[in-house]
Image (tube, rainbow, N blue to C red; front, side, top):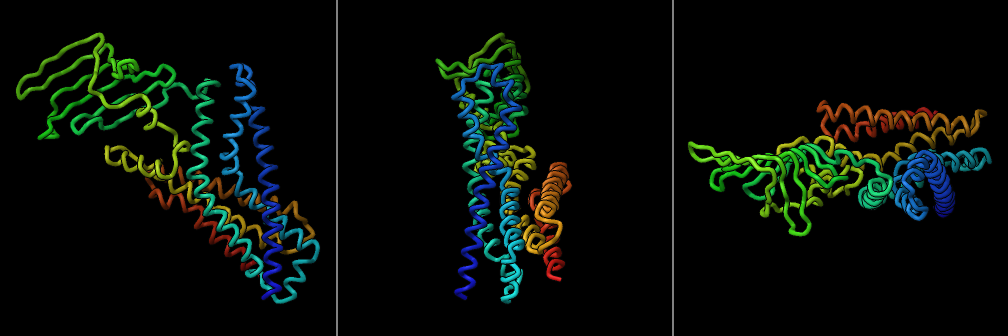
Length: 363
């Protein structure tokens, strides 16, 4: 028992040190490649070097989230592969330790890291992404056209506001409809205002509508009023509220994704993509376990092919996993599969394949 604890500590130490090296190396390479891609944008918009540095500081969490399964794969392969080449793994097997027991410390550590990764990718990464998107929109002039489209929300108990699209560059809501309903009969509409555009007056904290019309509905009559501009002092939302409703899923925390999906359901909108994004973020955090289950059995067997081919095989499996995840998400977004099944299907299928691979490696 004492001997096994010593081996476990040795394996965990080697695994974590290699993982740290892989994360640093992959993050550096990823950032350099992205810098080469965005260099023209930085130069064209005269982005200060401090902002460029700040951009990649807040981009690092997202890079780590994306490359984590590959880093885990590299760490497990190099740790076990090195032991196999040095005949350390042969000695461990000769002492009666099975492959399952050898894999146990890797799996425990990877599981704990995956749990931490849920919090990391669910809360830390979105906050970093918000600042990254802010820099892109403010200084790089990226992603400014039609920031949000088809926005529906309830301003009061009796008022529904519809915005066809909100242009963040002009801070302007376009093709807006404001509908007021009877407090005692929510199916009875009292008035409706439609306008081409609407801007927010920050001085008076009110919206101003342009080029529109207002209809007032009575029991049997209807009145129509056209206007070139009209002030709305009783609207309770601000441009910030509109933008919040149209943030990208990668800018939302897990809690915000869940709340926004429920809100979309309450307002009668389709929330499938949001629900898939919520479950996929958790499922992706646990993909590292699948990678370890595939990688360790292959690398634990000393082969003439060497570590490079083993790494190539496992990289192929990893990319197949990611490709299959994207395919299943496409089916889910079309309503063919429920959101939970869509997000976790790749994990379930590749977990079964990993178990079969372990049994094959034991022969």
